[in-house]
Image (cartoon, rainbow, N blue to C red):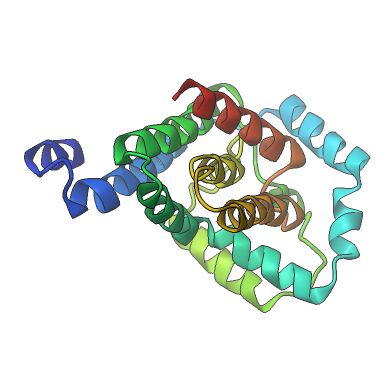
Length: 215
């Protein structure tokens, strides 16, 4: 239905530039959740073991309150960040087709791995982040209402954050720098907030770099 509506509407209209592609992204995410059958213990053990070897839980414990708040905000801030980066990309001459092709392929690769790498998020093992954050309650409500409740490897959050930063490299350097910092904060919030494993974020960055290079 979304694709049919997209074809019927003007290619350069508001719906096709700002609304329809984001809808396809969310639909792809929700559909991927239907492919989850059962967690894979060996894969989960590998993810948990890597986090422990990197000291992720210790990093979160030592994170100052103000940084914790900012990282929690950054995690859910990926949604407006994509739209902000679209605005910047259009201003510097990136076509909406290239922008959304890069973002959608990046995310679909992350979601498409789910049938072969099925794991639960860190919070499913009781690895709740020890930091105090008022914004965390908002993130948990968002996840309760919209998440597929399983882990995606690679991380779509981390992949999107880097992809949209790469797409605005033609902007003035302060804007580019801010976008990369925001993308890094999204990934850090996902990992230290225990929404994702470190391996998820690293794999997400790899996917974003490859897809951006191809597009």
